[in-house]
Image (cartoon, rainbow, N blue to C red; front, side, top):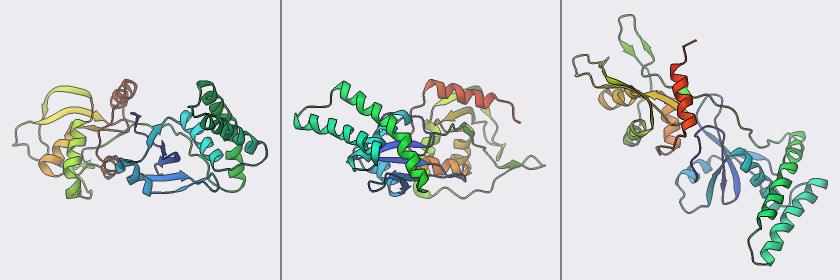
Length: 266
């Protein structure tokens, strides 16, 4: 899979089936997939583990603009559509069948034509689904980077407080590695004092990391490693859903992370 910013929705093809990772309003991770019998998107959570762990499947992560033609080609291959849409789908399939009969790959012109037809059919088929109360393709949603807190609050006496579920033992090493190895986007010289044990040497890193979806201080890793302080549950859940694989983060996202960190609190 090619690197992509880790925000949701995330768009995949899994053995040519269109699959979308979505984030429910309350956080966490869910998944929907396009059905071959109706062309709508239904909940299919099994693809979360399939995409993360199945090394034998043909999996590709796509930007939304490339995902739309893949959805339309999937619908066409399954004989869906009515009227003008069906005729356009048949044109797409006809181009594929001609190339297959001639034992050659699609030409650049044929691929461009299929893509162009898909852009025409997509809004028409989505409207068709909407009219029948069925779910269409989840649209891209601009997602602001989230900043994870080290603690939940600081008491009146200056003591940090937190009330979070512990990190499962089998996930601890992977999470520590994820928190440590994600790109650093901001760093200050020196180290901070340990807020839970001021007598310890000052070793709390004054850094910020990002995975392209979350931002967290280097202190999150420190307090988990040294004191067992769990990070925010939604950050843990997100990293776990990514199988603790540290993503590539492009320069634009790094710059956005720095701007988010420096933005005054409302």
